[in-house]
Picture 1 (spheres, rainbow, N blue to C red):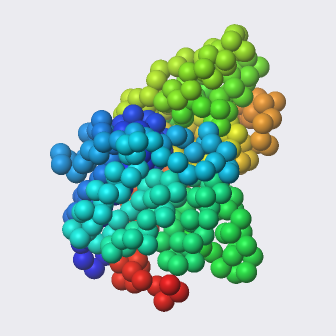
Picture 2 (picture 1 turned 90 degrees about the horizontal axis):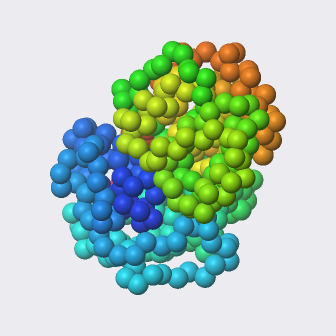
Amino acid sequence: MPRTYRFLFVSTPVGPLGSGAGGGVELNLVNLARSLLERGAQVRVLAPEGSCSVDLPEGVIEAVAGLPPPYAQSQRRDQPVCFSTPSLVANLWQRAAQLQEQFELIVNWSYDWLSFYLTDFFRTPVAHIVSMGSLSDAVDQALERIARTYPGRLAVHSRAQAQTFAFARAQMAAGRDPFVYLPCGVDLSRYEFVPEGNGSLCWVGRIAPEKGLEDCAALAEKTGRPVLILGHLQDPAYWQQIREQYPRAQLDYRGFLPTSQMQRLLGHCSALIMTPKWVEAFGLVAVEALACGVPVITYRRGGPAEIVRDGETGWVVEPDDVAALATAVERLDQIARSRCRQHAEEHYSLQAMTERFLAWSEQIVQDPIPAAR
């Protein structure tokens, strides 16, 4: 960029940074903030109380109090917009309004109606990194209005994610795309390449129904292979149900771990299994696995299917087909782990993500009020 910009990041309100409640959003936000700081940019992060990150200097994260919203995945599409009191989402944006004159761009990382609705009310331009596909009629309407009023302000992570929005499909059919594409990247220096797996499988993510852990448990029973499970335990009842339903599955749950510990465990596994029941916006853990040389077996659903090259860096199978997962496990010897690492280096580095983000930011800051408004 021709000059240094000042960024204000507004974090996801579902949980503190470092808790794992926000899934890949947390890692993306922290990685990008650290990368921008290393390039000389100024960054402040507004995040829920209890947030922590050893990767960011002291003083970058500012804690904001309030009650988190419910997970969007657990709500009906037609759920009315409502807020807990005191609302963490509202408090985050109130603080952003107080600070806005100190920054040239505000970057929203949350998937909440209020976060999108407030775009009109800020003097400093607000850009939105949309972290999920279409889940809420109210959110869809808010995004459609931003796309119409502020072209270029919405970023998504994958084509599959973009296609979940009806308004986007309609615009694409007319030759227009309302989204900027911002694939995620990781700091590859923090992931150790492991040339050979130990035979076990790995599953990483929030333990919640939309992540489909039960299919991996069924795969464990079918193949007899142990499965290492890593991630935030969002739904304890769901986890207990899986354990009762698949008593012969060798499931070793280690909890949510920092990246340094997680990648050491993941790297020694023979494959990462991804079994989403919903359209994953991206699937950052697939990139983390490839960075360690671990092949990925995923359903043909959402972002992970765009990351994995079928037969080259893993296998892409039809959704909800456990037998197909088992067949793919038996074909892991056809995948070169060195090629997995190479694919991550070529396409999903943090440097590449940062450069895409900076180019996007440049466009917004240089033209904060598009003529279409």
